[in-house]
Length: 329
Ligand SMILES: Cc1cc2nc3c(=O)[nH]c(=O)nc-3n(C[C@H](O)[C@H](O)[C@H](O)COP(=O)(O)O)c2cc1C
Image (tube, rainbow, N blue to C red):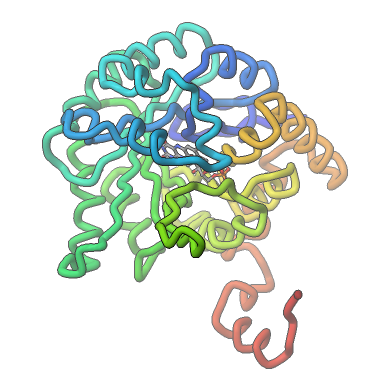
C-alpha cells in the first residue's frame, strides 16, 4: 500500500501527523509516535507572550485548568515553555527522530517576536506552523483588520525564514475561502483547518467561569471537511485537516475531500500515543476495503470540484434538509 504524501514540500511516508500539543514535549512519546506510524510531528506552540517575556501563558493555563485535557500536561511544562528551552526542544526532537519536526509559533501581532522564527529554523525545524490565535473581543477591530493581521504575520515570517510556513486558520472569517486564497497568494505553504478556539463555560453551582479545554469528538470533522472540500484543487498550499479525528474513518473522510495530511491530538491524549498505530493500521484497512492502492487513489475524489453531488456542499442542500426533515436525533 502506497501511503506516501507531500506536505509543505516535504515527502511524508503517510498522511498521519501529530498536531501541536504537549505530547511532543516528551521525547519518549515522540519516538513511540514515530514507531507507531506518525509521519511528522508538530511541537506545542511557543507563544508570542513567552518570547516577549510578558506572561507565561502555558503556566497560567496549567495553574488554572483542571480539565481532562490539562491533566495531560507534563508537570515540567513551565520549565519547557521558555524561548531557549523551545529551541532546545527542537534540537533534541530533531536528533531523536527521522520524521519531520514542525515548530509552532503562536502570536497575534507582527512585531516583537518574529525574529525568533529565524532561531527556530536554525535549531533545525523543517517547517513552521503559524497559529494566529486572535480572538477579536475588541469590537472596534474590523474583519478586514483581523485578516490583515494574519497576512502581516505570514509576510514577516516568510521574509525571515527559508523553511516552509503553514498557517493554522480559524473557521470564523466571513469568507473562509477568500481568506485561504489570500494566504495562499501571499505564499503560505500550507493551511491547517482548523484551530480549535478556547471558549469558556459557566459553573452554575459556583457561579464562576469555567476555563477548561475539552477534547474533540468526531462530529467536529464536518466544518473542516466542508472547507477542505471547497479549497481542494483551488489553492497551491498543502491542506492539513485538524479537528475531530478519533478513528481511521475520519482520516479517510478527510482524504476523500482532498486533505494532504490529517492531524490528530485528542485521540492520542485520550487513548495514549500507541493509538497512532491503530489509526495507521486502520487507514490501511480502510484503503484495502475500498480497493485503493494508495492514498492518491482516494484523495480529493469527493472534493467540491470532483463530486457530482455538488449541491451537498451548498445552500440548496440546506433548504432541502430543512424542508425534507433529514435530521438525526
Ligand atoms: C491539550 C491540548 C494542547 C494543545 N496545544 C496546542 C498548541 O500548543 N498549539 C496549537 O496550535 N494547537 C494546540 N492544540 C490544538 C491541537 O493541535 C488541535 O488543532 C486540536 O486539538 C484539534 O485536533 P483534535 O480534534 O485532533 O484534537 C492543543 C490541543 C489540546 C487538546
